Image 1 (spheres, helix red, strand yellow):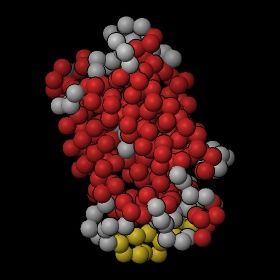
Image 2 (cartoon, one colour):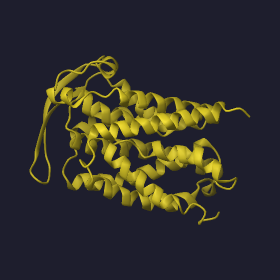
Image 3 (cartoon, rainbow, N blue to C red):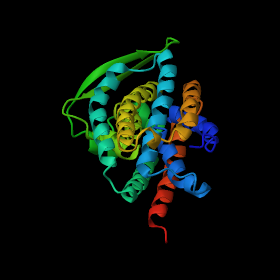
Image 4 (cartoon, one colour):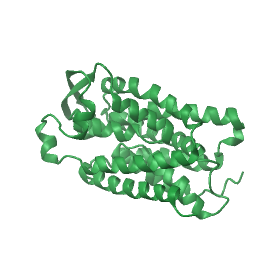
Amino acid sequence: MDFTIYWFMFPVSVCIATTAMLSGIGGAAFFMPIFLIVFPLLGPEYPLASPVAAIGVALLTETFGFSSGFVGYFRKQLIDFRVARALIVFAVPAGILGALLSHLANPEHLKLGYGALMILLAYILFRGHGPEERETGQPMSGFWAKWLDRSGYKTENRQTTDHQGQVYEYKFHAPKKGAAALGLGGFLTGLLSVGIGEVVMPLLIRRYRIPVPVAAATSILVVIITVMSASFTHISTMIAEGGLSAVPWNIVCYTIPAVIIGGQIGPRLQGVIPSKTMERIIAGLFLAIGAAMLWIVYRPV
């Protein structure tokens, strides 16, 4: 195993982790296209053994990156643990189930599903509501309302005070009967490495009207627990099937320390880029990634 071949992943991973912290979207969404699209273009010695191996590495790396970001947001006292706990109970079991099923899926089907998911997420982000609508606090309409309002909710007044004394007040509608979006997001995270962060952040901002700083910080905690559970399932299965050598340690030796650094940079830059602008940038990137992944699956032989 050559431990020098993936040296370039260190600076790349720092950038990815910083972006993930700013957007609240899982870093695996950015690692997967690198593993499945860029690596094969670099030469025959670079590609990973399978899409499942790429998913496992992406989730393992994301766990460390978001854990680092969690420390930054925890110091800022922006995390609402009550809200996070209410979401985690739906996401974690689904994430473990998705991780188990991914090892049984056809690799080409995983790529196809990933590409389609990226395009769907781009569409959701592009349909984001304007800032004037967010400030009114009016009940949400459209995609998220139709998807999420089928469950019963109990309104709870919440308040978070950060380390500088700034107070954020908002209402949280705790799920009664369950949240299909959270379960689906967790399942897709385990199956395709992407989903929970992309569901939680828009959910907190658009459905629950939680201020962006608190939403981003709380989203980080939900993503950490869900991704950690799915990652442990993936890595354990890989080791059980192929031993310790089945895990590409020559990649994670660069990505893990890099995302820890990026996880500290991201929270410090929170608020520098307007949330709407960040959503548009990420949406455009997701659209390009999804199109590229579908092209790989269906390109002429």
